[in-house]
Image (tube, rainbow, N blue to C red; front, side, top):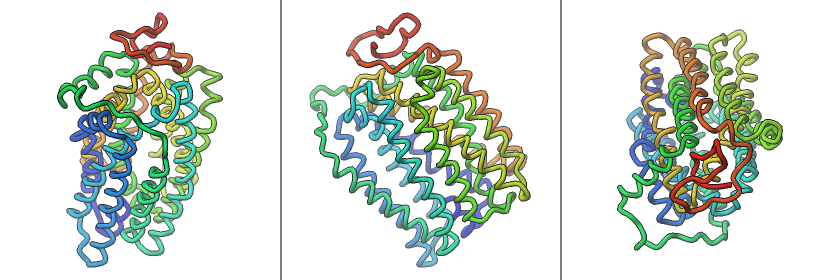
Length: 397
């Protein structure tokens, strides 16, 4: 989508910021509602419906291009509708994993999922870059559309029975939304993770909104080389997913989360040192490091969140977290587009890198550092009952 906007429609920095913001805006608008739905309905069914929805809406781009009707307003609409399906899918996705595995297995399960996802993204960006060069960005999006159909087929093969709470036990929608918000805000651990991730995502959104434009126009990289850079980042993510459990065993869960959050901001600041003469030499290791630290952070903080939350609250907890941590993306996108126009692309990326580096303060001041391993059980209790120093989380070890 960003490549199509830059190459076909000659989008400006501000227009790129709007496109990115519209894709992420549904997390802000519908994220909390999606959490209620994920706790009321079968999560697998929600995911399958969203996969079919995304496949259909993304097909609008190549069809519009074929009939010479592709425009930025159409791209904006596709980004928003696809983003809406993604919001409902992702919240159901994170709430679905604890249905399939025991809490003690969450870290291993999330690592395997990240290994799978990252492995596919090693080939994906490279293929995408070659496809854009060979047949054009709009037609290349057809492959993205078909990939969601493949996702739906695999989800249809999951046979484990998923229990759903009876409708007569529900609170009002607003009551359930409030319950999810309270779960996050009443836990210092969850609140610290939310603050760190939201701050990091805000500044990452500022950077990412204009990143493709920076790589294509300032660094003069072709679509194929841009794809190659992202593929190297995916290799880093694979390495991070494979290494995560060993790092946790050496450092402890909490220290791993804090260290990966801090180190994740360092590479982003170094992007400003890239010029056409050294772009690939610099960007590839930067993207590898970004993928490596990002996956380690996400695998461990998501596993911790899932492990300390009762199953009946998984959807609402994840929805509140996504509302907070992904709801800032559209704000970052708009800021990134405006800053790109005002102070330039390079300075915008530097500002974003500094902000990402500072995001670790949230969890450094929280009880996360004291968590050595995942809790093995999750009690339905009015108050938290972890050992001293970990008394703010939802469940007991």
